[in-house]
Length: 94
Image (cartoon, rainbow, N blue to C red; front, side, top):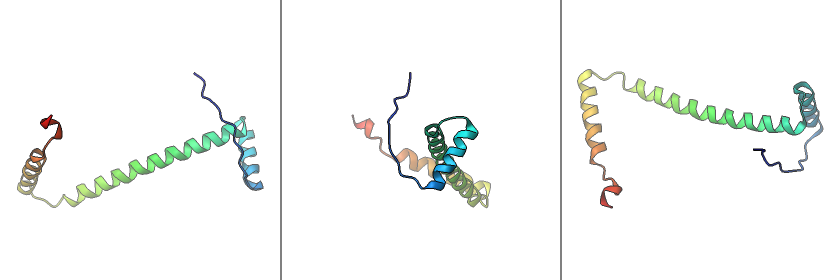
């Protein structure tokens, strides 16, 4: 199925337009396609950055727990289990 296209007008400075034209020639495509590719690439970069940020936070959290002894880990797991299972599920009341 074809993706609907929307015609739009943008005001860009001359150096930007020249770069777009250069990329269009290099990629053997239209300036519209270049813009579309760059916008979509930028969106995926932001998504990748968000995933990396979350994984870095997880790594930091795991490292912060590395000093615990096996007994302390067991105690932490037991307390976490009890807390999670003490939460009230709103669907249980239906």
